[in-house]
Length: 550
Ligand code: G6Q
Image 1 (cartoon, protein in one colour):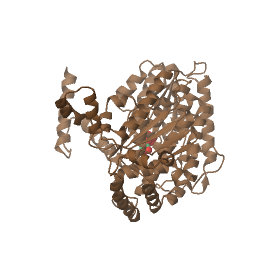
Image 2 (cartoon, helix red, strand yellow):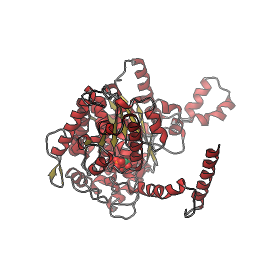
Image 3 (cartoon, helix red, strand yellow):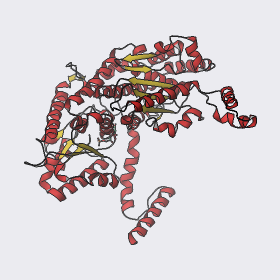
Image 4 (tube, protein in one colour):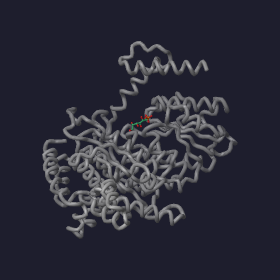
């Protein structure tokens, strides 16, 4: 964080102490306009951040902090297609993938829209052909019934999450996802699939990722064992920027869908990486998904900060992380179809902002990205909400809820919604010792029982949460939700002055795995640098031997 921004943080920390002197509900009592003031809308979507310990003054200082961090200039550089991913020497332009406006978008001066539209047009044509059976496993063959996306990280989490979220619109072939190098993933997926009617999509930007290449090779072996080598060209499709490697794998160029180095893996679901989703929901619905993302891009680029949802989400997050020192952030969608949304955001946020070095290579002067986690409600309520309400750490929360379900079970949706509102209220309002005692007394609990049990039943309250409330979980709404969080992550990275677009932290483990592989295969443990790893491997080899001999 820049020195001027750090100074504002110090002022905010002092001011926070003052704010925290009163209960959060008091802030509502003092200001009848509080909800209207600290919430905003984007179409049907409401972002309510009034249940946080902020007021006009705190928010004004947070805006000042964003200014001191150079947010506006950094946002302009993003949209101008400059190489803001400095450590990888790349621009960041995933917004072009959902630019449905017809206007140009430039990366270092060159309009990338013609290429983007060309790939999108090919994706549409191909997905339609798979859906109507005109592209099939053989000349006269039956239509593909199953599509297996093989990819990992950014080449998996997006399509998995989006296809789950948009299940009501999935009317194409069944989708499956294989990501883990653990052979169970591929084995379980292939069991029950008919090679004749199975299409494999190998999704890998680099086409060198070990997990994906090994899974793809094993899938290829499976197919060849059933249908012969010639079937590969019809049953395999590649999504990649590495055309040489896709060709070497045996996938013809007409079955390869490209994208560009300005599309980061965790931002790539809008690109060819979304092909599996397009096959499942159809091009028209996929286009609506893109439109939702684009709407947020325009909003982020043009709305004033006090109405700019990603900016507000980010600043509230900065408040929690840097001013209040809260270590984690929970994403709690009250939507079963969003059950992988927390995992998706975990990658988006933690891979982007889990950095301890500033852009200039010096240590970041403050805490950066929090641990992001979550599960859908109401399931989480029966598991970890205990800690949210009474734990010794405060966990800021984002609730997400659709006003209208995509299923016909109205009664379920009413109960689900009531639970969501109730949790957000309970976190803030809490229940005091006096209230607990009064209730126990009214219930006829004996005096000493009250004394013994009452402290355990106290809810401290004053715990912060945001609410994102929208009409229905449509492709357009999902596009909006993802883009809101993408830009939130960008704003926070800009304020922390870190590079949100690289991921060097995943490299060391990958390299060591390559070095250790021969030692896993053989049983020679010499040369391992630490006693623990050597001991683990020796034990591993003993167990492997026992298993082989039994
Ligand atoms: C995302 C990361 C990472 C990446 C995977 C897969 O931003 O870069 O999760 O998506 O490592 O990479 P490939 O698509 O190159 O196989």
